[in-house]
Length: 156
Image 1 (cartoon, rainbow, N blue to C red):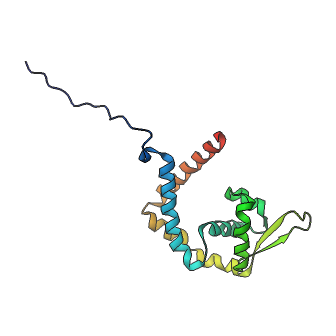
Image 2 (cartoon, one colour):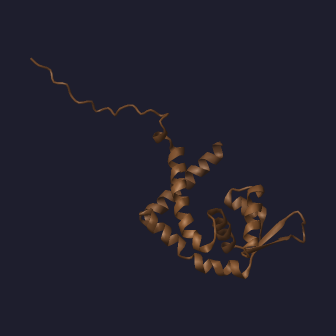
Image 3 (cartoon, helix red, strand yellow):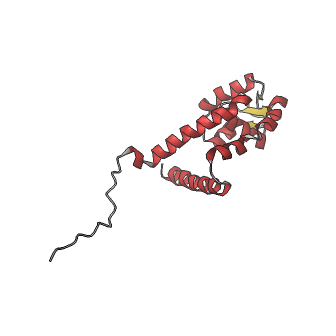
């Protein structure tokens, strides 16, 4: 009697040191692709992606200190200061020393910075189209990434 071998139902072992198995690489390469799309979308506004993030924070609430902006964006003041200087040179923000504490720099939108918000309104929708995802899928992904960020921050 001839024995018949069944096909294995086990999945082949994954090599966890392969680049394509790494969560970090998936996030990194996705970030690169995302930045490429943002570069195209933000070029007409004259903004880089980090500058756009700063502007979004100020469009939500202006009159923030550099450290408050940094907390919101997970950036330190050494990274933010050159960004803010450039935005000020472009005429989008003003930076002034706080009267109650000379060590604090307060950032406010200029009239041109406020007007830029209207021109930027199409960016989120254009990004949605470029992602080829449904709004619900993007919301779910965003929530998963925020949970991952929080867990990594707790354990970093």
